[in-house]
Image 1 (cartoon, rainbow over the protein chains, first blue to last red):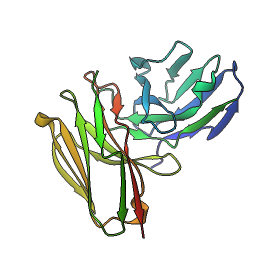
Image 2 (image 1 turned 30 degrees about the horizontal axis):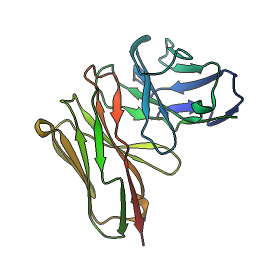
Image 3 (image 1 turned 30 degrees about the vertical axis):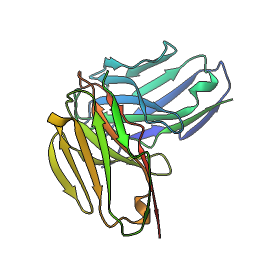
Image 4 (image 1 turned 90 degrees about the horizontal axis):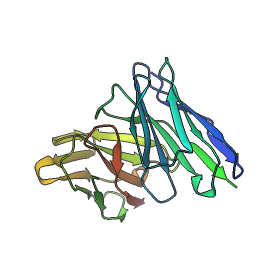
Length: 113
Length: 109
C-alpha cells in the first residue's frame, strides 16, 4: 500500500506570497495532521483534521489555514509568507482522531526568499 | 502543556556498539511514538508504545508511563542507524504529537 504522499517536494517562494501544500493520507485513514519542522528542531504541530473537521490547532498565526476534502486528502495554506516560514512541512495520517499511531509523509521543503 | 526532554542530545558510536536513548515527559500521556529521521527528512516509525516493552530486530523500546519516561535501545549499531531519533507524546486531547528536540546519532565504521 502507498504511504502518505505530499506535493510538491520542494518549493521556493518570495516574501508576501501565498503557498498551498497538498497531502494524501494512507488509504483507509481518516485523519490528517500538519507539522512544521525548522532546521535543528523537532516538528511542531499546526493542525489536525478528522472527518473533514478541525480537531486541533497549534500555536500558529491565522496566516496558516487548512482543510480536508471528502476523500480525506488535505491542503495547508500559508498566506503573506515570511522568511521564518522556511521549513520542512510534514503531513501525517492516522486511522482516526485521537492518539492513533501517526504515519508521516516525506515532507515539502519550503524556502522563502 | 506537556514537555518532552530527550537525552543525550548527541551520541557518537563505533559500529557494533550498543546505546540507550532516553525520553522524559512532564505529564501523563495517551501514547508515545519513537521515530528515526533519515538525512532526507523522512520520519520513519519505530515504535508506538504507551507502556511496556516492544522489540523489532536490533531495536527495542520500553515505556514506564507511571514514571513518565521511555527508553529506546539500539544494539549492534550500524552506520545506517545514523540520523536523528525523536520521541513524541500525544497531548491530553490526543490531537497532536509533542516532539522532543531529538538525539543525533552518528555511527562510524
